[in-house]
Image 1 (tube, rainbow, N blue to C red):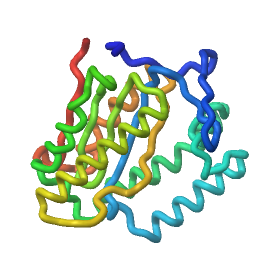
Image 2: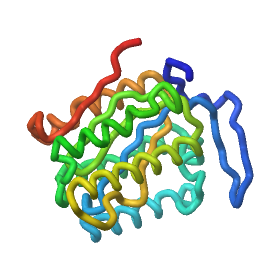
Image 3: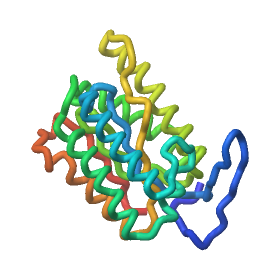
Length: 219
């Protein structure tokens, strides 16, 4: 496992594999990933957000149902990518409103997520900074191609859902099916995501007991 974070290089080799659909990968990529509890956004707000985002993608010749739509988005020019970021900002605003039961506010539940994130650090991936908010998680992770990253996120979600539901004596879906990832393009973008993670709790006035923040020490 490479001990440094690598960033997307549009000029470097991109591997295309074929299953039901073409799949685009670049080895050793770094991602900013968000996933959220199933009750974190009211359904009407979520549906409107999805409709507006999908309409934007279609207007830019990107099919939102494609497995590779995020890669296609990365191929757009900077102005278009910057315009698309308003959807991420709108989503983050709703997440930070702390809708739902906010079960991750419980320090015990946050520690379960932390344990899952650290479990394969240095083996399967390179774990970067992360924060466990009351109803969502932000994490930086490197050393993965997109397919491996998606499988790892699903593994984190599956294991933590089982553990948290068991700890709280509850049943049913904990996490929203869809997760969100951004391919980190360069060092400046990486530092911007680190800053966002660090400041997210204070931006919504959370007490130290209401979130779990971890920052990777300098290598």
